Image 1 (tube, rainbow, N blue to C red):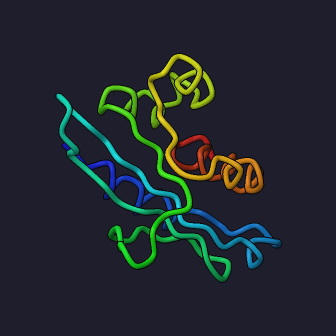
Image 2 (cartoon, rainbow, N blue to C red):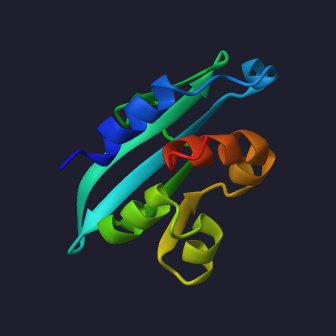
Length: 119
């Protein structure tokens, strides 16, 4: 089975940066858990008009981290579940500054479509 990180890396490679993306500078963590243990943890970093997947860095923490179990992560990735619904039902936890998500909503919406293969 392909890891969530490698799937994210492949999706980001296909992502074309929007014209105004050079202003976007944010680090969004992803934690995937199973049976209470973290099975994947990575950061999607947006900077200088590009997005890339990097390892978590305690000296440069993500502004916000999304935490979900592997089943929820798969359904979000496939598009059968929406992140807002997962958050409202407690299946997706947000740690950090949720205003970061709101401030960057357009770019994150485009990214979510690419990650779900609908971009």
